[in-house]
Image (cartoon, rainbow over all chains, first blue to last red):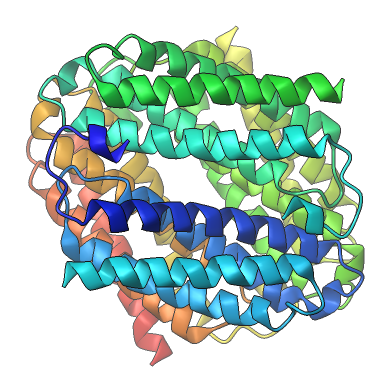
Length: 128
Length: 128
Length: 128
Length: 128
């Protein structure tokens, strides 16, 4: 799809595609992990995890949408949003990581969050 | 991720996973196609396409999130939403399909929409 | 804002504006109620409520966005989505209504959901 | 709704409620303005405006959702997201402001964006 864009894209297309894929995968993992936490008997100990998952899903989703747009591109907005998103992903990766040994969904989600934080930072590195 | 859900899932897991994947891919294709249309010289002829793309992205995104939740599952809601989503995807596939020969992004997006409509209907068929 | 739209709007503008306002208010109420449920000591008894709130917020949000677009309007899509949304709102209103005496946030949210279902149905009535 | 939250909220509740209201109003104004731009005869000159509107709607929507959650609150995430959102709102306010004399929807949207940027910064000021 990126190859079919009819104008110039002022970002590294390989890193951009990797970041969008990671953002979408992370958003989906966080939505599913929040719901899986709700179904655990120990949900009362997982409420911070649910909340962080919901935030991470929303921020990843918004960031993926913004990065998918190239018309009238503004590097400052992409950069600021990628920085915010990387922070949210790291925070959610840390939170899920604490429950990774107990809950397989948290282990999978923590990995998606960390992968997404890396992809955001990798794209950011090509933009400076 | 579906395998790690700690309770029963009252849907066909293979069809469910395929539908969620198709919904996410379709939402991303529609977001990117709307933006690519905006960058075409012929944007004035593509405004209905942009609008339909934006609707389809929003509805697929909401449907993917609802289908990713299994706690307190309500089959009526999933069914109604899948039906609405399949209709939106078909409509967007038709609209993008009209520009598929002119614009590669519309061709790719039309295919994602049709694949998503099929996946929604395939999941619906397992639910009745 | 509706008055400034540069082309014809083929819906009753008063009902449309009321529906969009109700959808946005309901989405916000559901997002806040889901989080308030997470902070209750009795969260383990409220997991279905959290889930239904999250679904309702997502569907109301998508419906508000679709109804805010008039370019290349398709009555079938608006109608189908409004019907699905009214069903989700009623379901969430019922669920929150069961906890309304215990939790003020559920009482407020149930009212927002019912008001939104009424606004969706009222707009639907003008479309047939 | 904020008053019914069952635990402490570590933010100024008046500023918080004002920011959430402004974010929701801005997201809705941006969604409607993007569509109104698509229906203008001069849409080819408004494509950057459409894109910026879509970004602003997505970022305001995500920020409103994150700010509506208080369970397991993390000030760093709220702060970073508010800063990113204020930047996007200012950028969109500037873009819409350039078309405010020609298009009433851009004038209304520019004002919603600037009001939202002010509300984000006002809430940020209470957090440091």
